[in-house]
Image (cartoon, one colour):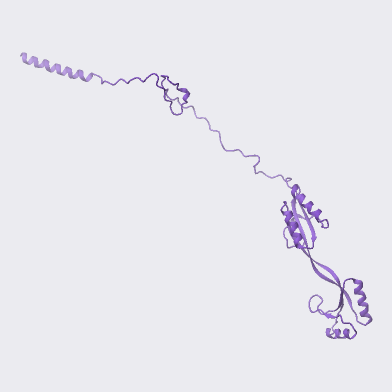
Length: 254
């Protein structure tokens, strides 16, 4: 009986020991305190002024971010000096002028080069005009054989004779070209005394003259000065005003 009682007490002690062992909390290692003179380490974005050297101050938790503020636009404002607004209609006053006539094409191109290098829009205009250059003394065959008329003239002692074969005077018989009308008239009377009816016609030749038409800004000092210089260097030139719309082609007559 006592043996069973001992055995029961032993089992109760074992059960009590096991129950108590489960109730003991796990042991944790106590952290070793840091030395008091160890400097603090600032967080990213935190000013180094917030951590004093040698302090034992704890790092505070980051504050809650403030409410977001509207970001100001960084789009650049237009610069008043580069604003491409409408131009003032009075900002430029265009004037046009015609320079000439010039007898040499080379001289006209020299003037064009000087003007265009100084702000002008100059171009060449060519004029083809008929110019009188002496007087012809002529006999028209009037249906007769020209060779027969020439033979009669030579029989009368008139040797300065030849016939036009082309051009406006084709078929006419020339009895000389004279620089003045008076000389031509004297020759005509001599022929009349020998019963030859002659006439006087002016000799017309093609004469090319060269003009420079230019447009420029009347407020541009350099352009105005270049035009004034051209005028003083060529006082014989005419400077009539020209319609600006006429300055378009170098092949038309002025």
